[in-house]
Image (cartoon, rainbow, N blue to C red; front, side, top):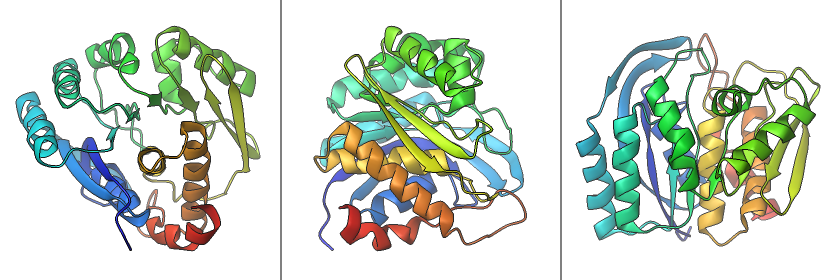
Length: 270
């Protein structure tokens, strides 16, 4: 398989392999692109929860971003876990230096098991500064509620919150609807010109660990290969849904999805 593009992933490490940098690398590789990384934190975790988190100093994160990109310039960047305002400042400065336009931000705030991964100062910094610097943000409902201070109980609320994120400076938003108690999942793609809804049947499973990380990395991969942002979202949602359906059922808690499902999707969606 010929490598289609190069991606830099800025995110935390998940020792269980289901989320974070590990899920990102698996997704990017499975979809035919080359993954580079800047690790922001090291976690000890498994499918039942997080045991510990060690934060990487902001200077070391910047060194990873800049030194890697000087040698192999990425076609796109995916950003995940950023644990402090200082780290966000450092990432913004590094992004300005390496001048990559296609940037996807997954505003990771809480793990599937409920562990908080970001502090309040970082949330404010992300809300006021970082979301304006990227091409797309991909919050789930709890993350969108934190960023907008809007309680989301319906698809109508999702649209209202997504529009508020656009008003706050986001260029494009994919608001994920998996947390609503409905038989179908509605994900909403929105910018100043259009609203697109992606509707899919909700899959009944506990194996959803790393779905947000994988989705944003899949979007970044398709986007880096020349697909439009909206089409990249559609393809990435298809990829993750198939990955959930074929999950290996590992672990005693929230298990990982099957990133290798991309090979089954290849001829149909690429």
